[in-house]
Length: 178
Image (cartoon, one colour):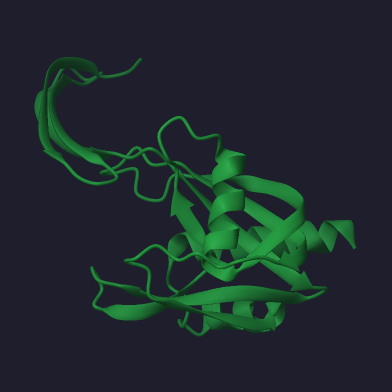
């Protein structure tokens, strides 16, 4: 079963998401108000620049008031196919296009307060393209061994959930195919 929605109130329309409050009756019979964010979804990419080497970005994230390590990623535009979003974001953020794509999986990063689904990819056979950062993107691209990126996870240098999941899934996929 699923919760029965009794009432829905839009609270805030942001640039990329909608915050709503729903009064719901849960399967246990309890009625309550729940706030959550409706998100269009996103794609995150592990760019394999050479065997055993990846591109990571260090990007300013205002909510955290700091630069953090991440894999390239971005939000789906309205009605945009996931693969188109992944291709667009890889070029925009890194200045590379990929000839080969592998879907690694999907994650729901914050299911307690958002319906966002993040599609994870491994991109390889990279060729130079024109980087086209959005006006609000402040980032630098870094090339490094995948092993170093994985070490950065265990050392706490990479804390971004989508990046951790994408890098670990990429490692697992590469291990199976080698």
